[in-house]
Length: 146
Image (tube, rainbow, N blue to C red):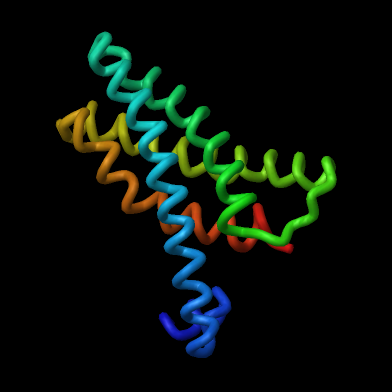
């Protein structure tokens, strides 16, 4: 099953594997900057008033998606057309893909904090383990597909 997944991702041979690895590594670097933007906004709102944790989560998400588009388009999934129509299409797909996984993360955040008693500090970090790989796959196969 893992072999089929790697082949689908373009890593059927050694060269393809390293190309995919490098692309995922760059995606991870972009993800770190997305996370920094999102978490900075989240923790700022948590510092202002802990009751505003959901506002911080949503606003942080909106700003981090803009960051994700810019860097993924220029640094990770390169070679796409640069005309306005193509760029706007990818931008829209970026908001849909990240928006979907961010909605998932927000729902998980609420479930973890409100129902399971997970710390408001650690819950967003746990959610990254789900959303990062999911975002990579969606971006590779849909948002930035050539």
